Amino acid sequence: MIKVTLLPILIYKYSTIPDSIIIEDDILIYKKPYQENGSVLLDIVLYDLNKNEHKTLETVTNIPNENIGNLSMDNGLIVWNKLFELPSTEFPKYNFSYENYNIYTYDIKSELKDSFKIDDECFYYSPYIFNNKIALVKIFKDHFFYSEIAIYDLNNKNIDSVINQNTIPNKDYIENIKGNPEMNKDFLIWSQDCYGNNLVYDIKRKEFIEIIPNDFLYEKQYYINPYKLWGNKVYIKGVIDDKPINSIYIIK
Image 1 (cartoon, rainbow, N blue to C red):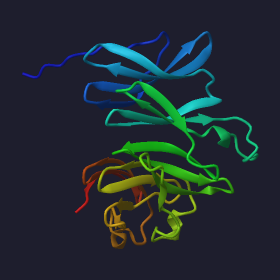
Image 2: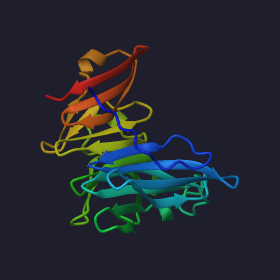
Image 3: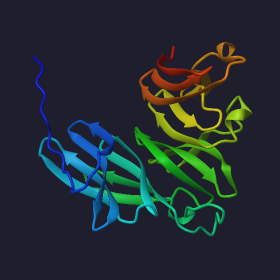
Image 4: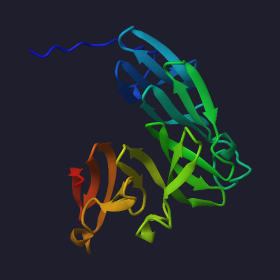
């Protein structure tokens, strides 16, 4: 017989469903939007399942002008970024503020919160952490529609753009916005608008792997993206010749 235990999670008045839920060991992390005094707020909440205790790590009080991006956690270290829709001196055509694109971290063991900016030439968002390395989307100040996927090493502070115009085999993948990177010790995935993404990056071999063979996709209308990575398994979703695709791809 399967026993199911319902765990109480802090619920606010006028709250909505928790978002970006992540669990590691007995720690649950999630984003919680709610209303208070006519305003929309958003918290990052840490919930200890053993102690039945919660802690608010971050609160955003000025939605939609300020928001919280992706959450990620590995080995007790939580990372996220903030999104700002404010007038920008660097990008006058776009509603965001480059100056505020920091990466935030919280160490569960030490209870220390920190933030840092990687460099002043680019901004980085959508962080995903694994083994003290963070995969991020990288966008240059002078080329908003060109993006790369970079890996930042928290130990030596080095940043390496692994997905860029010099490494990727097909230029069609370059001139559109990338997002949602995810990695493990072997592979890196990411999504793209416009053309989608039919590639997985092999970190150790430093080479690209086709998710669906291009011979099969030849002369077909398609848009697919990888969305989740488990070991050597990739969840892909999209459309091929108007037929929806929801599949698990095994990297061999």
